Image (cartoon, rainbow, N blue to C red; front, side, top):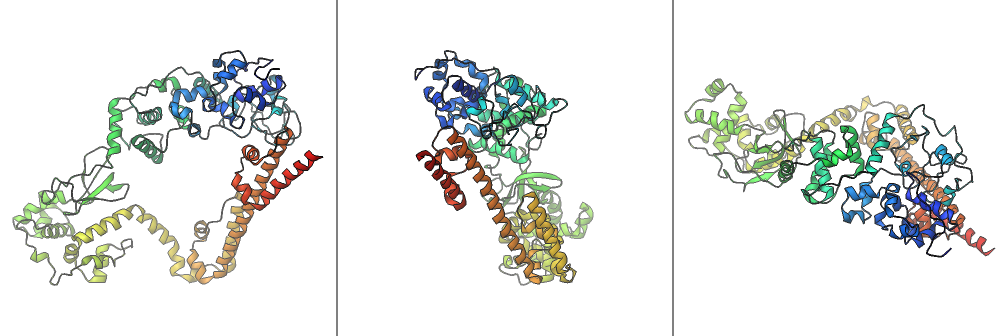
Length: 625
């Protein structure tokens, strides 16, 4: 056979993967798989990309020429058509296309149905999809293991074409009743999945993404649009199917054109949830109004509101607005985002979704319209309470607030302490803002302040900025802190209630045994919580138990390291056997490629390195003999 021709011009079977077809072609022409790729100008070490995105390594023109056919015949032999429809050109020629197929395929081992192989020597492309559990023709569980030795079959090996296990030589068409289950019927879910992938493979619809900057951005907008019920305005609080984290990631990508992009796995889940046809999905036209509303929503984080307080020197300006880092703020049962405070009048403003900013956290604007006119008329606090049906606490608070703000006709002297302190912030920092009692109650106990004095010092700029950062920023986690404290305080404050040492030791052993059985790490948080105490308490009264736990953690880590080394040594040995069986030299690069054990890991772990070097020494001795 000429170096640039093939004697037997094979054709792919229906649904056969491209790499399986090439292995079969190499076997029929009595050449190695590597030689065939060299003739077709395909890099051997990247050949698995042929099944998922051939464009990344070749245009298939040379291969089509060798086989004297049109390269369109290979469309259903890979997922390349899907990448052409849904990915931008630069991504089709980049390794980043892998991110689009995240979690979808098994790229390490070759999966198969023994009964299908018996009927036709063909490894189907769809068998590599992780969600495919059973063969849709025979109802047999798909597997990658030899029916005899139970070793996983490599993704590329000419032994697959001979339908033999690369390790023991057993026929892969042999049905193992122990390790494979024959379902009574193929589930509807698997049938629908098969139909969906067939549609994806043969889709003719082109993605009309003119309204976006890229296909990825348009897919992100499309997901948000469908999950928003196809409404013309984007409402962040009214999006179905998507988690809060996923929504935020999509919005961030649309805004910055970097980071997290939508994946095919997410598109498929969306199709299954909504019962949409993929062709209809791609034909959906996103309204310009929806895209603009998403852009407005993204801009809300950079937009600074103006102060809406008529009595404030910064009224209708944003120069004195400061922002909290808190993600959400709940006020009167409504969740708001993007919370700001004016550092002059101390009024907080936030908004819900795309709505306008409004006052939250207090009601000073209401007091401006209702309380202040009564104060200016000289009404007493008692009459204001009676007329407006508000509490004495609120009436006093508003009275002192407008006094400190130097609003016209309000007597400040009555609300000023006899000997005002210069820096009230020092006194507020001594209060426990996350304690069980209220701040005003603590101030009364620690500093002897009445309500009127407390409010006078409260409406100080340093104090307001301090409380805005310290209290508001932590409000989201206050409840969690309280819950945690209530769980641990019993043992911290009442040591006599601690169980006896043998009981605690038994609890520790039960926890450690459970974690070892599950293959999970021992963590102090979960361990001491399960004992209804804290590490600090146990360290104080039973320090030897804490030392015992630390020793168990060291032992577990050593066992986990040993187990990982054993597993990777096994993969290296299997890769070594596979490579040498095909007459190749077992270099670092080939071992790393086949075993997927990092090169750095082999070199930095003495046991693993020693096994590798011994294998190669044995190979060199055998070659000399």
